[in-house]
Every structure is written in C-alpha cells, then in structure tokens.
Image 1 (cartoon, helix red, strand yellow):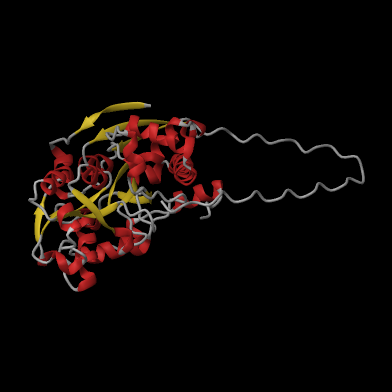
Image 2 (cartoon, rainbow, N blue to C red):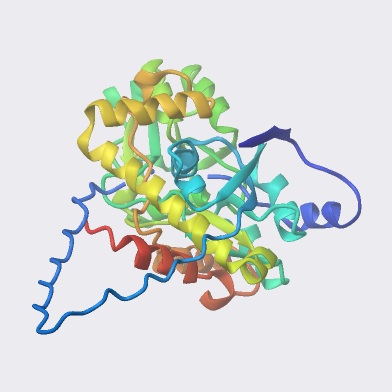
Length: 378
C-alpha cells in the first residue's frame, strides 16, 4: 500500500470552487449468520462409451490496477483495512493507493475531479445539493449504517441529570443546552427524529455547535446538558464520568445510513471491472468484520489490533465497550433512510431541489460482488 500524508484541503482553480460548493461532513452491524451452505454437487453421469475430457479453457487473469482512495481513518473504515491487510485486494490484483484526510469535505473535490477513484464519507445536505448541480460522484456501498443493535450515534446526557432522573425523555430537553454538529448533518436529523417523538425539535432547545471532542469537555464542566455524537465519543465521555449513554439512534431510525462509499463517475464508467473487483475485496473485508463481532474471541481481537494500528483510537479496551458500527455484509444502501434524510433537509430549507434515487446511487458494483460471493444471510 502506498499511504500519503493527511490532507487538510487545497486551494486554487476547480478545487477551490468545488470545496466552496460542498459542505460534506464525515460521519457501526446486525449479528450475521453463518455463510450460506454450499450447493450440493450433482453426481457425475456414468459414461456409456469411452470419452475424452473436454479441454480446459483458462480464465484470463485480470490486469493489475491501482486504485486511489481517500480515507479518514475511522472504525467504520474496517472493511477497507481488512480487505487490504488480509490480501483480498491482492487477490483481485488491486494495489491500494491510500491518502488520509481530516474530513470528507477535503477529499470530495479530488474525487469529483478524478484525482481520487474512491472516497469515504457521509450523508448530508451538501451532498444532495452537489449532486443536484452535477457533481460527478455516486454512492456505491454502505460504509456505516444502523441496523438494530448498532446505533453508534448516541444521545448523551450529563451524568448528574441522568442520575437525578431530571431527563427521562424527549420533552425534558425543552430549553436545555444540547451539543450539535454543524447545520446540514445527519446528527441534526437524528436530534429532530428523537425530539419529534414528543412534538419537539431542536428549535425547542438551546443548540450549541461544538466538535465531538469538545462536547465531552462541555458535558464534564456542565456547559452542556446533553449532546449527540458518534462512537467512540459516547464511550469516552461515559468512561470519564461526564455523561451516560441515554439513547441509541437505531431505536428511532433503524437501518439509517450515515456513512457511505463513493466512486467517482469517471472511475465507475471507465474502469467498471476494477470497480467490481474492488467491491468483491471490500465486502470480503466487511464480512470478516461482521463475523468477528459475532464470534468474539481471537477473531475480534485480531480486528481490534488492526483498528488500533490504522485509526486514531489506540486503546483496545474501548472497542469492546463501544456500540459497534454497522457495516452491511452485502453492502446494502438503505434507500428509505437516504431519501428520508434528503426530505428532512428539504423541509429545513437546506436542500432546495430533491434528487431522484437513480442520480444518487449506482448499485451495480455491490450486485456483482454479492453474485460472486453469494448473499450473506443474517
């Protein structure tokens, strides 16, 4: 693997215009079942006359390819890391040229201009607006969803308020100071989904825009009453005694789709075979991740060891305390969730023009990979 230094954005020309047009924010699995049993092989017919074996036709080996990918280095990148380190990309004769970024916003212009083939990121208002304006990228696979039990986006409540039962449900957040992400992100979508259960919205609270790490400090010094953040921040906050995990968002938005894998349209159209082969390797890695979560033991320890080496979360013990990120073993993109998020951003005025599903996604790569690997049945 060729790994490049972290990128924090570039200026000038097309990239500056694209950066200005984008406001993409970055953003864990249902317990998988065993792989489907192999189809029994039919018995060979008994020959009645002497026959010669048919000549074997060699399948041509695919041409080697280099794929340029942008990552942030999150736990939800586990499928990519496993595909690389366990040789699944090498099986497909793909060399990964990986470049690390601080945020998805800085990698998306490079994806759109063809300087990256694949990028990782999240669903937000800026994405829908950019696609509406013709951004040449497509969503191709899940890279962070919320099946039941994998709600890694969590409402946190300050520990003293939780212990005293001053906050017990959505109506108790009225007038409270709550930590939120920047406008146009899925965490605001989750807040309004949660508060909306009792007829409230973020407008009924006192929202404070903070980074996820800063939310922990604000909860600890009582500047915040509550916050909504993705793992590992809730586990870190709970470990420090600053807050408790109050509500996992898979309970109000099951099968929601915060994180996705993007292909540039140029890559998808000009190198579809490489795109298919990459997806086969990626889903093999994702399936290893799911099996490790289900089986635990040495398999889970091996995945955690990989993640401590490839992400900024170095404390192995934290991984076993976290709510896991969902990575769908079939790469499924949850259409209802994605379109509901777009409708929410239209309602808030952040998305003027809704984009049809067919312009947002390209499912042919996961369809091919599942055909090769077989469906992974829960």
